Image (cartoon, rainbow, N blue to C red; front, top):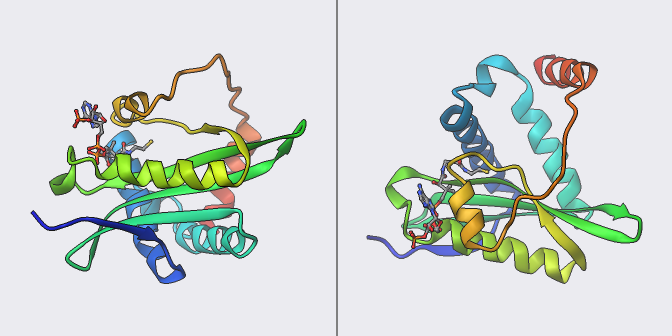
Length: 162
Ligand SMILES: CC(C)(COP(=O)(O)OP(=O)(O)OC[C@H]1O[C@@H](n2cnc3c(N)ncnc32)[C@H](O)[C@@H]1OP(=O)(O)O)[C@@H](O)C(=O)NCCC(=O)NCCS
């Protein structure tokens, strides 16, 4: 098995991060954003690049033999009553490289960076496959609740479909 190295993603790596986002939604929810939201990739790239340029977003990639085999994104959120929240997103490892600690290494980079950004906590939305990974890193389910708003859903679909 090839050696896996972890490095900070550059702008040119973000298309692979987008590919892996689509792979997550396919695996987890059997959805295909390319079919459902034809414009989502360009929106994704512009949002992430803009946040990167403000120093609030990072992606890390895992590389083996010049191929990206895993990704994870981290963003430092806006201050909330004096506390800065960190978020992790888009964690994906290709099937042939799973259960070798790749996602854990990516997550540690994300968490380390969020800590350095003075975040008070790290949050994420987990797929069922991701749960054991996050639990192994000390994440716990909280009492947070969510109300899904149709209006927001529609605007998401419209934005990405246009
Ligand atoms: C979830 C995912 C990122 C894990 O990647 P990975 O590189 O295989 O994870 P790791 O090897 O670092 O796993 C670390 C620990 O997490 C737990 N774990 C990870 N995957 C697991 C699985 N499928 N079943 C049970 N435990 C699992 C184990 O405790 C594992 O340690 P161990 O292998 O020593 O037992 C990968 O399976 C994946 O990309 N899945 C599809 C996309 C997805 O759901 N991403 C999460 C989005 S929130």
